[in-house]
Image (cartoon, rainbow, N blue to C red; front, side):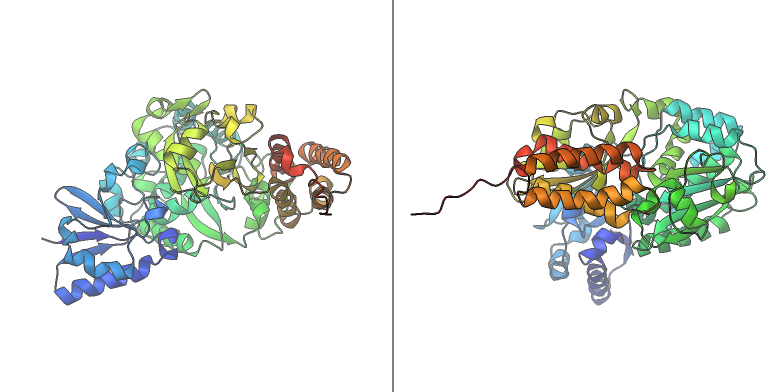
Length: 518
């Protein structure tokens, strides 16, 4: 009987030697003359255990990790192919606490199946949503997505169904589906994990969006820093095309839809939808004034759906299981699940998909296990480099859009970066302004000039030059940028700056004078 061993091909696993481990396992199999198949799957999202090697046994999949090349011989000696005991053994993968307590809807296949096996995709309930969509009226699909409560997972949290309805109603002989996969926030990796670990779910979601809105062409816009995702998506698109999932007749229906991957140069501002569209058209990635909205005049002036990877990848389960199934998860106006990405100074960094509503403290203390350094948590930044810094006093905040907004924060792409008590929050505020200055497209004055002045003012505060006056000036700059910038780059930069000043005022105070010894 052939034994199957799973070794991730995810970029996070590759970064810590997964390819070398796979080669070592293959050599050991060859030397021993064993009947073993190696599957290069996606990551389960438990990065502290990568490379995580799994073996399929009659008792389920057994996990071993983190595995190094030097561990391979001892794994075989311990009979790991039959689930044998070993110091790196974690038992059944599904029972590892970090995984066991998740609600995996969007990521149900990630790390489980062969990313480029259409057989695996179908076996694990893939294509069921698209099969239902081709038998439905387009506006019925839009209504189901609207009823599910799905909101944009890329930052703004705009209701997906409303955006689709706008594009569906807009006149136009040509319409487009554009997937914003320009994942550039610090501490985020969910888009990359889907593209590398379950690419067909994104293809399926985009095809459903196309049928719902009357689009016939789609583009995945991602960044050059994601070579593995780009290659995997391109291969998956070709497989889907050959299988009739894409092309002139989607699953044998009257609907036509095809798509391709386009690679940007990695400018942060191209994560903003209008800058992305300019880049996709071959122009400089600068922000467009709105209106008109992309849903009315988007790519090449045509009605365009621009959705994040997570939004589109969440659609298949909604069409398969129904809007009520999805809506039953979450709280308030934040429905469904959210893939939380935990990074920074933590013991257990990785991806954790769960329903909206956990408190920030539960995520940091219970799921992430606190800091890797063992020092107290000082600040947590949620929502990328433009997200607010929350102190431990706000750890009771529920993880949902409205609760974070009420506390002066934003969920954004749900990336969390943790800092211990050695962090200097004045330096973090300065970094936010510097980041904005470097990444600004330069089109609007508040962002282009305000961020540069912000760096200068932060340096004056650090040098003890008129600290009170300059703190007031920094706050005034933030106010101008927040309300005067054309897009979220300049408009959201005040979030980390003002939250650092509000919650950690001691880091913005001049250093106490030390009297010289007599």
